[in-house]
Length: 316
Ligand code: NDP
Image (cartoon, rainbow, N blue to C red):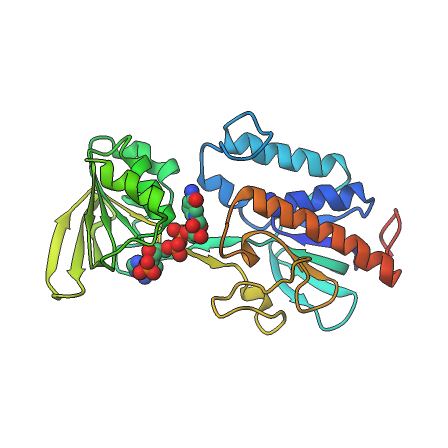
């Protein structure tokens, strides 16, 4: 089995930044991509808030992340990690292809995934159900859509959808939004956005052939049920961290996020984590990249302190 100084799990901004930093530290990292090269950036079209990035195209930013990491010696492997053994050192990382790698240190950058409602009809993804307004908004020109959720993401995406849809209804389970006041104010001022308070989606109505034609809404205070005609249902009710691989192996908080200290250390020495898998607050590409870089710097220190670094020509 090959032995690597650093195995990075995940190919979002955090994993790539970790690759760039570990690569520049001559650690010859192995980055295992998972299924989504680019992570959640693939769910967006424009990136306007990544400092120093003058372009806007998310795909181009992802390609640049990857090119930079590779330029400094990161090996990018398209595979999916199915199991990790963190009980003995070097750690073992097993992949879907059957390959295994021994790792002197591991950087977890597996990100998070949009939370699902768990109602019938939600399987009509791509046929009216969406978790990404920037990806799918275009298909709802002059249509009616609902957005589920009351946080920053839901309200921002509802505002974005007004570029396309004729009417956007935010369905929120309480009588108060969670979104920040500035974002709320923009929604309240926009005539195309209407809010359906105290309501949940019990079912998404539609079928495989014709797609979504409505949503069954229930007012949680009165229990009144209404079949609300809409063409699209956009769901923004938070995220679930991708940590199932680490259950019982690394400390997780009550919502399943990896617990890291200020230096990106997890509960196992030699295992570091960056990005959304350990960040339930900011969830921004810049924070993901920063914490990925920090993870690589700390991994380098760990390897130096433990003198278990494999020097170039890493296979042992
Ligand atoms: P949040 O956790 O902030 O909000 C999730 C929303 O979904 C809440 O309103 C919640 O309701 C609702 N919700 C959760 N589960 C369900 C359910 N099963 N059924 C119906 N509604 C449900 O997630 P976001 O993705 O909006 O944001 C996550 C983080 O990212 C936040 O810190 C946010 O500030 C940040 N962010 C910042 C942005 C910006 O600054 N521009 C843009 C997007 C995100 P309830 O309120 O009742 O709990």
